[in-house]
Length: 103
Image 1 (cartoon, one colour):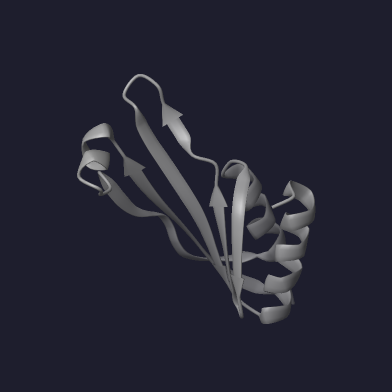
Image 2: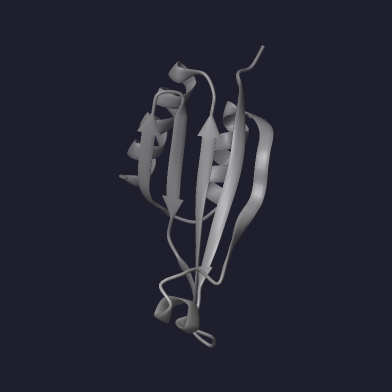
């Protein structure tokens, strides 16, 4: 039976006005608590944009993706993929992402 993981994707949007106030214009969840297989988690990570950073803690992995910038409006949108599950599966996933993207 394949290992299932819990996957969530958070986002935040910073506008010029919100940056002046030191806050986000908008935050929330793109995906929250979706059950996925190991392969689906890898696929989801790759589909979210280039990973620029990663944090591993026990049975959780957070991957920060490159900001998307709308040059017309100046909005910066950031996404982070959050994965929880079996400690060994999380460690393996972190190794694969680290090697593939050199994070």
